[in-house]
Image 1: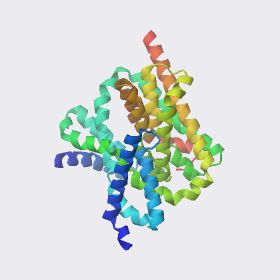
Image 2: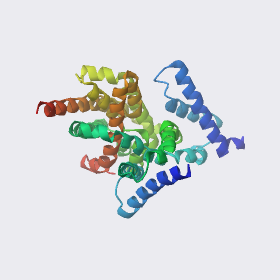
Image 3: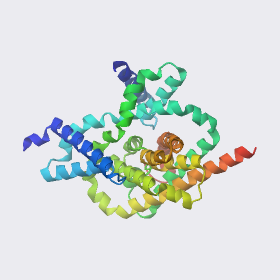
Image 4: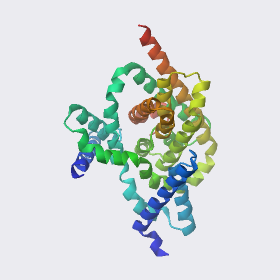
Length: 232
Length: 115
């Protein structure tokens, strides 16, 4: 069974499970069967059953993990393509992003702190609204638990995708642009894909919210946390 | 493909260098992303020079964080112990962000439209 620890084999398993999970979601049409969460759960199950320690999996996983940073850099391309759109509504977009970003960090930190979460967990929750690669980078830089961030971020995305528009209705957010932006700001790529299902326009603004809140959160979080009494 | 990699890793490398030199608390990848946007805007980098690779990376973004996500198995005890704060804080905060972002946008836009 020593072979199971082979890093190329583990990479293959990762690819195969992800492919299967994507197929599963497509066939079932269920948002909740998020391929990322399903693959992570299956891999954890696989490692637990076979008794392979995480440190062995990590050797193979690192090769995939490695592409996370270049992928974040690649997000510069859609940002460039959206520059014109941002310019048209600079103030409303910028202010709503700034407020959304601050509310997102402050509220999650204060509620978690009030309920007695430890510093390590609070730091991991702080960037929860933004897209996973950015959120993980923020958490990693501040000494949180990146994997916890990844899981929470995906769940936040699902929350937004499933309940986002309902919450917006209840909260009397009616303008399509504001709704699109909110979806992207609060629940990143998964929220964006839900917005994209409504229409291209919703989707375009949602992806704006996703990118801009990502940048703002990365810039603001390290400086905001100490103000909230959380050691970085 | 080689040019595409050179540009993307060039931006990332510049980000790493900036973090190394200044100690700024910003992920190098975010600096790289902003740098790439700037280079595209200035026209120093043409869109078709990076389009293929960046489309590929963005389309498969989800896959790249599967392995770090698996590290969750190391933290089951922490998560079990703090499950309630994690879930409540996340749900409350997500609803707040949705509504407040939307309100702010509607409000500022309404103000600037009236002028």
